[in-house]
Length: 380
Image (tube, rainbow, N blue to C red; front, side, top):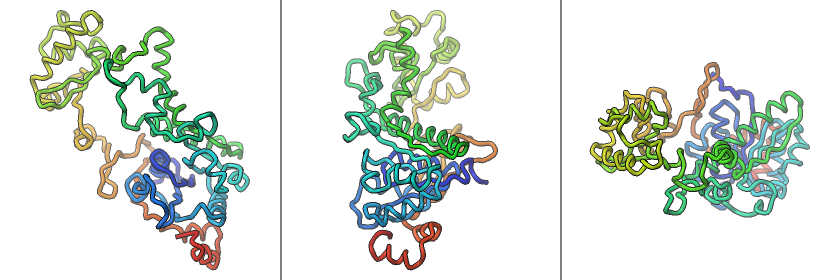
């Protein structure tokens, strides 16, 4: 059964991390994603290994040298029959290659041109390099992650790269596609990871504006600043996560560990935080993580075992929901969210460059022209 984006054609230019993730997401949702891959022997890059792996799944691939004018022309001809294009070059690179928004939209005014960078297309930092940690540093969010008496903790690059970058460009892309289908007008989307990440912090900033959030680490309800919202070490050195914020969940937790909620130290009184933390630390260290998991599994107490990447796919809830899929022998998250009428599904691994001839034929290239491109080293 086709996915919800069946009939949408997307061109994905070479990039690392968030752009391939977005291409995977769109392909899983049913879009026809055509990935432009570097030619064999081209200068290797950090993201090259992703192309043939699970992150590169579900696409058709054309091997193309975008640095040549003939290669740029191939892309422009492909763009004539595409709905969208996504790229993650530094500002100005696509223009220098001859495949920037002006050139592409001249060929296809209805196309949505999605651009993803760390800093955005303009501004003082736009031409400079960066990574998730540096984008996050300038949002104010990194300052709030970690322990009060140590430097901020570096989160894995989920927040700026994928949350602030890929997911915000996905939202923008779909919104612009709706606009293009209604009006015939394409447009350019400037998705900056720093701005997407900043937007993710909207609730925290709202709390701050209302006087309900201190601009310090471990000083707030949701940053480990209270004993009923943090992780605790168990007897086997593994961990449980406690999120018993509301009184009814705190009461259920206390009852489960043999404490009377009426007399136990309260997490709602800052003066009792130290005693409350000591109570929970001394309690959770008495059993293994999985023993606590079994105890809390039937309870509504907001307590869960902290699983490793390897353990998570085997958890009964994840198994029941089919939350993980196997693609090319690797375990990966199954497409999300769920659709009742047009279910999404992970596509097969992509064979790099395998669709080159077919795509050129669809773009109107004659056999002799294809031979010329191949002889010139423009295509694989």
